[in-house]
Amino acid sequence: MKEKKLWSGRFTKNVSDLVEQFTESISFDSRLALYDVKASIAHTKMLERSNIISKSDAARILSGLKKIDQLIQNNKLPLKKEHEDIHMNIESLLTKMIGESAKKLHTARSRNDQVLVDVVLYLKDIVSIMNREIRALQKVIIIKAEKNKDIMIPGYTHMKQAQVVLVSHYLMAYFNMFQRDKERFEQLSRSLDILPLGTGALAGVNYDTDRNLLAKLLGFSQVSENSMDTVSNRDFMIEFISHCSILSMHFSRMAEDLIIFNTDEFEIITIDDSFTTGSSIMPNKKNPDVLELIRGKTGLIYGDLVSLLTLLKGLPLTYNRDLQEDKKIIFRTIDTILPILQIAPALLKNIKFNTHAINKKMRSGFLLATDLADHLVKSGTPFREAHCIVGKIIGHCVEKKLSLFDLDLKDFQQFSNKFDHHVLALLDYKHSIQSKRSYGSTSFKSVKNQIKKAKRLIQ
Ligand code: ARG
Picture 1: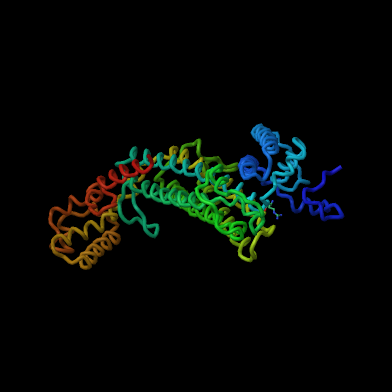
Picture 2: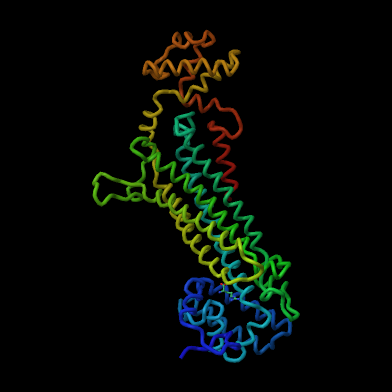
């Protein structure tokens, strides 16, 4: 025999099995169980202190909820589809455990505000886990940058070798991207600091409740202002997925860089065997699948963002059952982003820069072209003219299959008499790095400064 629905009063027939299957959410919202109990404990205390329920009822409810909390911690909470969602599963179980008093728990609240407080509490935890993981990743980036601080690589624009940069500068670029991510999530923590509970179904409740007390008990610093907005609001979920989308986009770009650097054509990095996979047919293969999956999973997160925005775009105020699907979406986002956050630092640790191969790739010296032009500028040539002169030198080298290192002073002077013997000293990548003067550049001094600041930021 099935138990009666908590809302069955006005119904003359049992709900069809098909409908029960179709409308349940317990199969995915059970992960909110601990937060649901936490919110119910606060709600019970508030009801008691506001003289809405008696001390003895409150005591019975609280002791029942604590037992349920234990069941959840031990993974023993019975979950029934016939009770639809996590809220009614817990309330039904409580009623079974303590009887009549349990029926007073749902006074002055609705599942519409209850589900929100659960999700907000849950997201608060997830966001702080994510910020911790991002910080851990940033630490690895700093260590990697320091360890490889003198290695130079070609920097690219349009996927063509452009100017020489330090590997540490390159790595610190990602540090900055992840720093912005962390700041976005910190900002979101402020949106999550507003208590939705206590607004009831949509209009508020007919009791003299104390929402400030609820906020205090649950660790919120503010209370939401408008009950209709509150039960309809999913902005914070959109923000969350949006921030995750940007974060995963950063991961995906890093993955793409590293995939390219790892190709047989570039050979800039080698990934440790333990972080690569093989092919079932080609014995020669050692593939960067982790990086490819990071790139691929990013697409799923973008999909989640569009799913949630689409779920909301036509929804009239206030609560509509469509909103039940919101949880499926954010849970999927979380289940996609967390594993990426966990594997990324380990992956970085398992990457080596191949100085020998890198130096071979930079042999033409064309990465120094801008430095040559700047050298002419110093002796009075306008930059645009200097650009043209050096362009001709590069064209000459390309035609004759020469590198810049093959030219001597006389060769240079054929293109401009402004070239003096100093030009030969320019033909050195280290010199090029050292010549960068602007704040935030790839010079040794600048990168050292960046690392110093970064260390302070993640403390
Ligand atoms: N399981 C529901 C959800 O996740 C809880 C709120 C139900 N409210 C309602 N009016 N049926 O959205």
